[in-house]
Structures are given as structure tokens and as C-alpha cells.
Amino acid sequence: MFLVSMNGVLRLDGKLIDRKQIEFNSRTVIVVLLTAHIIALFLGLSVLFPEVHADSVIATIPITKWPLDFAFNTVNDNVYVSQASAGTMSVIDGQTNTVIKSISVPTNSYLYGLAYNPTNQYLYAANDTGPVGSVAVIDPSSGTLVKSIAVGDSPVQVLYNPFNGYLYVTDTNSQRVDVIDPSTNNVIKSIPVGIHPIGMAYNSNNHNVYVANSHQSSSSVSVIDSSTNTVIKTIQIPGSPWRITFNSNSGNLYVTLIAAKNVAVIDGSTNAVKKIITMPVLPPYPGSSFPQTSVGSIAYNPLNNFVYVSHMNSEYVTGIDASTDTVTKTIKVGHYPFTVGYHPNNHNMYVANHVSNTVSVIGTSNASTTIPQAVCPEENVKHWDKIVFMITSPVLAKKANVSANTELDIKVLDNPQEVADLKQKVLNFLGLPNENKTSLRIIDVEYAIVCTASKPSGNLLVLSPAAEQTSSFDYIVTPNNRLQINVAFNKPVDTSTVIGGTSLILKTEGSPNANVVLTWSAGNTLLRIVSVDRFSGGSGAVCRFDPDCSFTLNLDGTGSGVIRAIDGSLLNGGSKDYWTTFVVVG
Image (cartoon, rainbow, N blue to C red; front, side, top):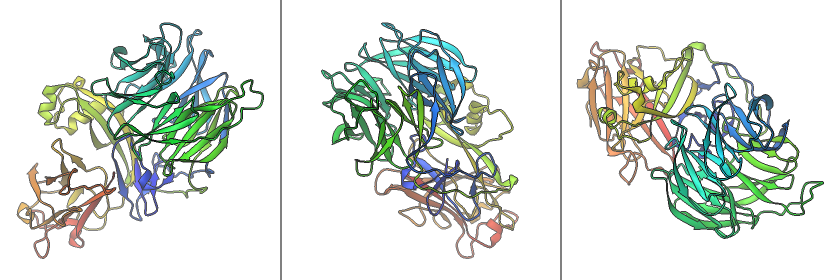
């Protein structure tokens, strides 16, 4: 979750970033404009963040044997490291960058690609054990093997798809991608692709999965529509595509070409190659028996808008400035950097040095600054959940007036002292608390801890959204693409003082007082405001996204006709107009 200051976006871990470079779980980001009395906190505590120098190795972590790939747990910050033929998987604390645990795996395992499933909180590890490969399902909290799922020959990478909740596995010698349903941990489909598929990436804009087919006779990228799990296009790229990353800022995909030793850029909207980036030729690491190096793994960092590339058999990682698609950084790491990965919590890049048996941590903050301490009164600390879910039952979807199997999200207050029942929270929000929880599938959960402003003096009529500041938690987009804002009052309102078309209700980019439909409920203490115009799409929409969108809820009776409660009390004590502004980053 992000909060916006006048100078940039302040993430809850204290890193300042430019607001044009925000990604929130591959979906549209809603950010909050800060006033002087709003402070971002982590766990409600005062935090002093250490100085981090941009693009330098800030930690070198010893690993027992042959590190290969990473998975990042955004709940507890841990980094999981797969190791070839080591019999263990290392666990790194992403806050201290030290190994805190080793998870035992079967001795005959050759763990390669890893993926973390935020829904069941399991790890899925590609296990290349021979003609019949497998995916090991591991509970990282207990360190136990939950299940071994048979897949194709030589599984390499595992990818979690937040759109449908499935796991995708490239089976290199079977020329296919297997799809695993984590609710049963069974393969539900095998998708034929090109020869020797290796890397994959998920495009959050169109929900497609991109697969790098590395054999020179194929030398292509297969595009899988994850709503049907079928290949809808094959993009030919000479030079043996190896690994892929998605740039959430531009919508482009970057593909390393292991034979050509360059990087291809694919336009994610057209699925066409738009550029080939010439990469530097770097020397082998000292003592290497091989004379050549080549590009290998690739990962995008939305914090600084750079794409990082590992150069296998060297001791370097390079950085591509995604705004110009040129190489501007060369960072020395360990011997044979096999994989580079991005940690979404601390924004650092992690590099698996396969020969050095180390993991290099590259600090990527834009500035070498120390964030000052921030203190918030305990009564002002609010815990919020953003729950992303699907309703799988058509019957329940009809009751909730939404489409089944469509990705939805809600934002609700959380009590950090209680165990969260996420499905019950969703049902309560939908007004259907007694329905069957099995009809829901939780896709993702994000947490935000916000220090709210102290309420101005006076008799505040509006409970939410909070007045005199901006909020990111009190609007939704309806299934028919209309903006909906729910307003809660602390006492019944004289509805004759709230007149659509006369009272100033909603200010948008295209209208100072947009047309809305008002619906009262709960004894005139709840007001639902729905825009007549579409939320997005077309010149008449509420949001034009050029590139961002803003709209303001103004509850103002205008002139002498102010909005009042039945007992005569005014909004915000009657001294100021009520307003709350939303900013949506496109």
C-alpha cells in the first residue's frame, strides 16, 4: 500500500518513490495525497530506516551449495532460495539479509524454479528428477513437504498467476506448460508450446502468460491466454529466448536471448517485438573454465524503473534504464550470477551466485537518504486489508449482483489483535454473511497501516470517507463500469438538503458537478452515490487516465442550502466544506 506525499510516494516500509512508477500487485494503484498530519507507519511503530546506497551490493549472504532461484514472501519478507542437489532450501530474512532457516527436501531433489502462492502460503518448487519431473509443494512455516505433483520432463520455472490462482510450470524436455490448481494440487491441463520452454512472465494488463522457447529451432515466445489456457500467439525472436520479465510501468516484456546475448523488448499490447537491446560483452569470472558469457535471468524493479540482467559465467549484473531501453549500470556480484530477482517489500535485487555459493543483495534506492522517525498517536493508527477475490458460485454471484469468476477487491478495516477470517469479511461486505464460504476464492491480500488525521473540532456528521483529506478505501467500480462511493453518517440526514444536480456532490475531470444517482438506506445514515457516466473508457468517462485520474467527493449544499442532519447539525461542524479527493494512478 502506498501513501503519496508532495514529493513522491511513501511506501509503508519508508522508501520514497516517484508516483509514476507505482505497482500495486499488478493492478491499478490507488494512492492517498498526504496532508501535513498524515504519517505512514509500519506496525504502528516509530521506525528509523537505514541509509541505502543506490545500486551497490549491500550484503553478501553465504549459501550452503549451488543457489539457483528465488521466491519472495510478501507477508513475512522472507526470501526462499532453491539449491541444486543440496538437500535443503535456504530461507533468508529480507529485513536482516541473513539466513534464518534451512528447509530439508528429499535427497534426490534438484530444485530449480520457485513460486510462492499467497493464497495457501505454500512454496511450489520445480524438481528436475528425470524423465518424470515433479513440483514439490512445501509448507514453509513447518518446513514439510505437502505433496509431490508429477509433471513433465525437466521442469524449470514455476509461475503464480494472480488472475486465476493457478501455478504454471515449464517442462523443458516435454515441450509443454503444465497448469496446477492449488486447491487440489493436481495438474489440470498441459499446454503444448515451443521446444525447450524455460522462463515465463505474467502480464497483469491482459492476464496473458508469456513462455520463452529456447531451442534455436523454435526460438520464440508463446503467449497463453490464462482465461482459456490456450496459446493465442507465437512470437518469433531469433537468438534463443531464455527468461522474461514484465514491466508494469510500460506494459512491455523484456526477454533475454541466450544465444544472441541481447535482450528483446515485446510490446505487451500488440505482442510484437519493438526493439532489440544490445548488451555488453562481459568477461568470465576469474578461474572459469569457459571463455564465453551470456545474458541469463532478468527482473524488473518498479521502484527505479530499471530492468536487471544477470550475465551467466561472469561476475556482473547490468541495469537497463527502461525509460530509454539502454544499459547504464554494471554491478559486480559473485561468480556465475544465475538468477536475479526483485523483492517487492524492500525493493532490493537478489542475485544467486551459483559458483560462489552466495546471494548478493543489491540496494536500489534512488537516493542515499535517511528517512526521519515518524510517530503516530495509537488511537489514529488504522489497519486496512485489501482482499482480492473471486466468487466461483453463479448463485452467490447473482445474489451479490456481480459476475462469477471475475476478479474483485474490497478494502476493509482490520483488527490486528484477531485472527482474520478473510472469506467471512468478504461475505459481510457483500451483505451476505450467512452464505457458504466455499463459494469464494481469495486471490491475494494486501495490508496497509495508516496514521489518520485527528478529526477537526466540531460536530462531524460524516463518519466515512474521512473529511478534509484524501482516502483510498471508500470507492468501488461497479460491474457495469460506474463509480460508486459509499458515505456513512453518524446520524440520520435530512435528505431534502441533498439534491442531485443542485447540491455539489461529485467533481470529476470532466464536470464540476457530475450527474449521480443517490440511494439512501439504514434510516438515512448510509448514502450510495453512483455516477451516471462510465468510470473509464471514452471522453465522457469519470477517469480519462492521462496518465492519472482524480475526482473529489464534495458534500456541499451550496449557498444557504447546506446539507444538514435531521437535528440540524452541519457537515464538518459547519465551518468548512466537506471534501475528500481520490487519485488513481493509471
